Length: 345
Image 1 (cartoon, rainbow, N blue to C red):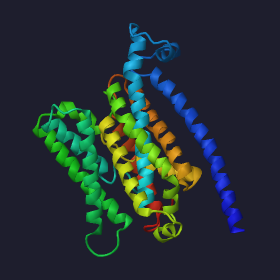
Image 2 (image 1 turned 135 degrees about the horizontal axis):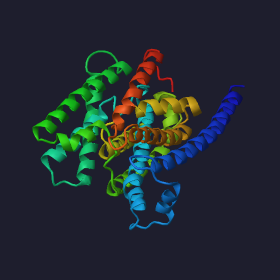
Image 3 (image 1 turned 90 degrees about the horizontal axis):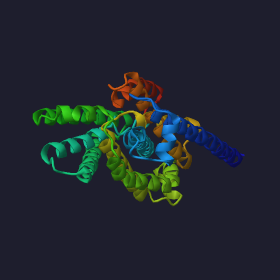
Image 4 (image 1 turned 90 degrees about the vertical axis):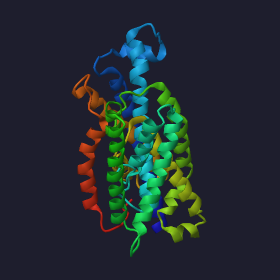
């Protein structure tokens, strides 16, 4: 009877996965068209289609859509998918439903790495920024665990979140001090607030291979991540190599967090909100939840950036601020829903 119920549940989740995946993809297509159409200047749908299928760089409208709006849209998609997948993996591997690369300070570690490169190695290119962003994320991840295990008792959800938030505040202050000391305020203020406004194709070309690598590896280990949710002992009993899974998971989180920070700057709460919603949509099977996280994370960031463009055309809001306005109430709601340290994925 129990096996029958479990099989029925998996079938229901698979059906819901197909439905929500279709809705998400359709929504992303619609939002993408609206994103390319609206902004400081409104373009026709004909211009949009011509910029894709009949491009002529001598036509101003087509050139602006192709060279300004398209890379920015793709950047939003990459960032939304990256942070959502990273958040889902962090929540699963740490059994911490509040885990998010922004809240836990990982994004601020990456940001500090980028700020240091800009301030002290101004001739450095984008690959150097990516490397320092990943290094900063790795250092912060180690610090979170180190601080969380110091003292008596086990590593708890509350301890990890508080450790991450403290580190995030500290690194944010250090980043701002370096920016002010080196006269980089005008150059870095939009970046540190989270904005894709200055994204160009070279940013996309740099990020895309790392993004695809992170997503593909995440999908490959998705079954192992699901098994790990059953607990360490059960996972080992089922033959899962938990050490390899955790190592790959950490690498994925670091890469995807670094990709997002290099493109758009530090953005919090995406990795908290989207995985939480995805679990309600399709359950805790990572084979279903990771693709849903990717699609709806991309959709969410694209919608927020579209709103940022049309609230005050020409003088845009950094999307990091808009996401925070939504994310803080969600964080409070989620924290009140948790029972102790239980992971309710």
